[in-house]
Image (cartoon, rainbow, N blue to C red; front, side):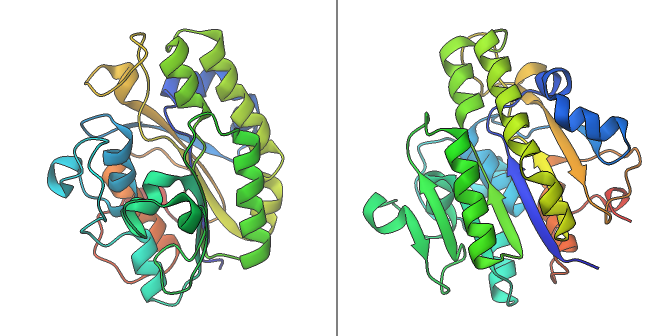
Length: 267
């Protein structure tokens, strides 16, 4: 049994757009090699609070990370801290807010953009601080980390879908085409990841609205996808909560943990 996991968080990806526009992932579903679940994100439906939610299993109103302007380290055990403390190798190609939550805050681009330090929770990192940083480059960063450091847990977190949503809104060709682009980039790597024994989850922090924003309770802001691929998933219908993703990943990594998890999601 493999105990390696790749978690892909496609920032700002609405469920319906994922369902309608991501042809490669939906092709895997048609061939019974992937399963898509619909999740409702926690509130507020904002990025930094939901990074913390996904990676610790703690709701924003309980974590204290309740808006994007709170710059401090997480006060809860995360997938990264649990994995690192139990001898696993961790890596992330992600927006710099992830570094601020689990490594060092505030982010210093010269010091932190390329991180390789086994004492940190995210031992190997390629972090960026531009919302328009190309998703293609981010996936290349992630694959470099994977091939070079062979992490047990790898977070991949591109930003272009969210960036296009803030510029053009949910119902725009730019937003939908950015989702299609992410699907294409994933198609370049997924077969190899699965062949090398990774369990793969592709999800989002929040959705998007036509006001060029998010943060509230509208379904288009809260409904997000979860695609799962790998032989450790049950691939049967079940109700998955965003707060349970952390526990699911910890279980896949064979970590000792007390996080809530969706038992029906796993074999």
